[in-house]
Length: 364
View 1: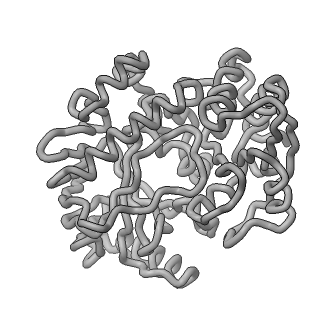
View 2: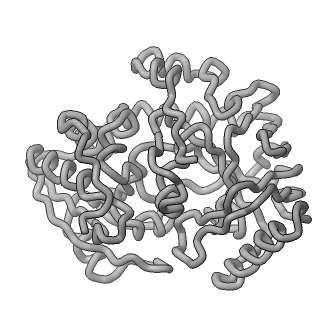
């Protein structure tokens, strides 16, 4: 079994996405070496089209390319010894494997930070998600980060009833990942300890990719309202059956990993208008949760832990996030002119059309 395939992607677009990774993200040089860490495609998470395109582009760029198959594990407290040894022998490492994402907050001492691929198939690599300039999206991300850091009040609502306000407390800036993400999909997490109000939990609860547990996703029949005080769940309201699902899931995951079940660690929203997810989320919720979150229609909170990033993802759809009264995300759409500095970046990079015509597909 070859995993999910995308045979219709034009080769030229795949090559462009691969070049964006190699040149824009990794800054490779001829004569260097690159390790590709891949899962067995029978796991049906990553396809083979994207890694094959990257390998071909790397060889054409003069790199020595090697590959290793990574295990798919529940907990990844550290990398296997053979993988650490292989990574230590090369200039660059690219993860087409979930074990890289599981260790994204773990410090490392490799020559260059490993890269975690969130373009998980050829369709994504060859779309505007994979081909839009990597360094430009870092500048875009920083516009949003600075907006959040300087805001006196952030107010988040959604059609299902979310209504929560707060700001970043002094000294509570959250950690960034130690690996590099390709591409940039979200803002730096915003610490939730300064936020109070209510968050509407709808459709399903799913994981954050740090651990792989079962059940990874719990479906909800209706809306559960989580009442929050200073980043802590103080009550759950809704139909008894749905409240029981939320409560039991949080308690179960917290017990497994020794966590605080009711701490809400942080939140962030998608910033990449090219991040379309064109399969049904219900086909593979874990795959959806690891790839769709960069779409501006999704804002998610990290719950069930007081350390990054939390184990349970609370996903809000088509949220509005106001910064000092200005709606920056409005019903799941980014209003670029309301973000200081962002219009200048878009004008100089030619990405204005992408932000004006985002991919609204999120698998729901």
